[in-house]
Image 1 (cartoon, rainbow, N blue to C red):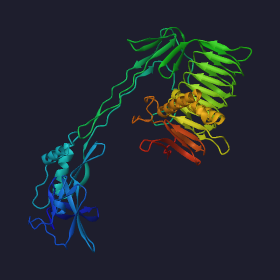
Image 2: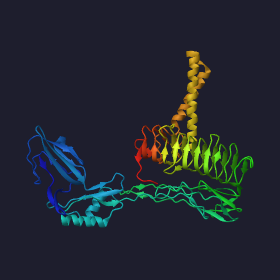
Image 3: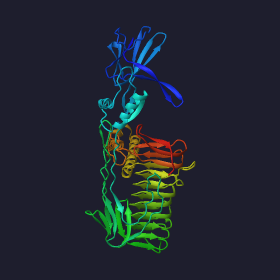
Image 4: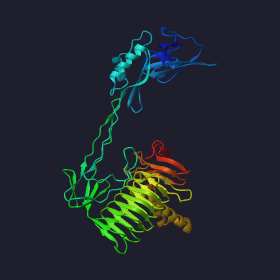
Length: 551
């Protein structure tokens, strides 16, 4: 066997420790590394017992029916000989001079000092070799030159030194309304450090006629990125918003400003809807003394809303006491300082709902829902997030939101399990539930019909119609994609979309709790503590991870 490359060992001093390192001459693609011929290259011969079997390591290939070994990359070869009882093997691995990260954002250099009479690689040589490897962007010329000079002068190799970096894309910013009046931070917002703001909502902010309320700030396009190979990486462009005003507010499309058409109080719904209305005050309870309240205004109730009474308004609603088996609807936001109690309590809000606790009630919000203490056996639906702090408890019931859910504890050792659904288009999920009920009803109907009339039932028009209707419902159910922003009927397609919704539990989540994130479902089988649940986008399942910080 003949070796067709040179190598030697150099001693490297690291502090008080000295270690040996093998260096080799630089080889190129297609260059002969080993052969079993008799040709004399003067580079290296080794006498081994016959036969010797060649093995191709990384960046090598076998040629001439196993009689020679060739390099397939520019780099540094390493020979590994093994002498076993019945066979000798010689394998070579070539460490690339230039390696590029899988995402194309880094190019690393492994550089050995020159071996034998080989010339040192200068800056222009390294630049040429980088171009050969396809690296055309983000090259650090100064670092490259200093590295080349240092390796030659100190005869000390460098391993995987970054010599080129790509540029990550900068995503655009969404359009937003910059408030020109002091409204305070809306509760439930995520801060920059990931924690959640639980300050009280500032309600009933007064404005005068003609006063500037907000200015629309245009979305930005962002900046595309680029890999070291020169490939562009698309950025996410910012999303526009549609500014909507109702009641006594005016939006000027030219100046992008919102002003009050008359004096009143401001309501901000889902960050892009602004209302100005009058404020109505109820000192005490909503009961037989006041009757039901229907109004275009905002309303502040210092007491409670008693059983069977109704509040239906277009502005914000503030309840200082409880909602006791009553009905509340609003085009604005809701704050309940007390609790919502009773199975007859039905709350429908277009904006955010900020509540203390809810028991056996139903709450639908077009924005976020903030739960400050607890939710017991209730149905809560939110087009935004459902947010609680580390002391918030969920016991039984059903919580559904398009965004994420954050709470303290979910369940207990004796309670009926809760159902938690996040990262799910609320309207599609309601349709999904309707389809599911329809499939079960049709299956029951066909089973009862067959039981009653036997095989002859299959020939009846009613049975044939049921079977067609069942097949149609099952097909629609299988195709329905619940992830917000996805095409509706794409569940079984190759279509993918990021579903970044999470379920964060600061305390305990008990066995039996049913979780859904988008199209994925999971039932918790053992009690778990301090967990975050999110979609594993490789396995497409709901996976848990320990909380690494507390918001």
